[in-house]
Amino acid sequence: MLDTTYEPIVEFKPRSVRNEIIRGEASRNRVMAAARQELVEQGWKNFSLEEVLLRCQATEQDIEQWWSTPAALVVEAAFEVVEDPAPMIAGPLDVKLARFVDPLIEVARTSEGAYLLRCALLAASDDAQAGAEFRNYFNIHFRKPLKAVLAEASTRGEIRRDYDIDICCELLFGPIWHRLVIMRSPLPEVTARRAAHGLIASLRG
Image (tube, rainbow, N blue to C red; front, top):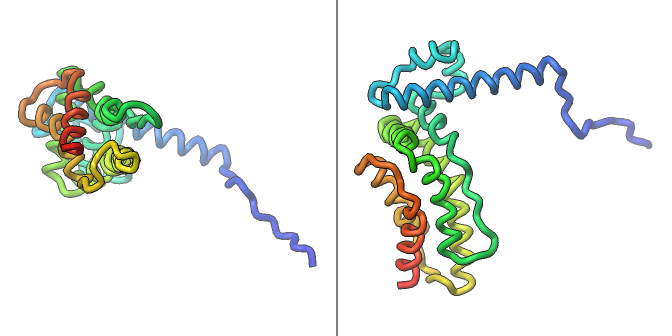
């Protein structure tokens, strides 16, 4: 017997639903932009959610809908301006590794950008939920792609096979966290290449 049931391939959303989604995303972006401005002006310790709401004319219900805590908002708002790293398929290993650091340096090479990322790191250390959000973000956008690049390099014999991915992350990104949080200064452009060379040296030693 012929089966006449129909299953749509593409989910249909009425225009009103699509418009609501667009408006919701636009409101969410306005909240994050307001949060970044508040961070630049006041820092994390003096961060005021009330001021953020006034800046973007949002409500506490909006915040609760999208973020579990103000610190989680701060982490996402700050790292939202960091582009995803674009790992190279071919090329020297040091250049491939430097590409992971480049997006962070692009933001943190200015005093304002460095301050923004420092505030996000402090918020992540102060709040458990924000810390979980940061670790998830870092794992998806940096740790996993880095692991794939190192696995390929070890297969080709460019580095040792007995590397520890977490130690590699510490060697590659540790100098960035140190300069942002401890030294409280912007990142020079040479940071990426130096961090990459340091990691390669440890993997070939």
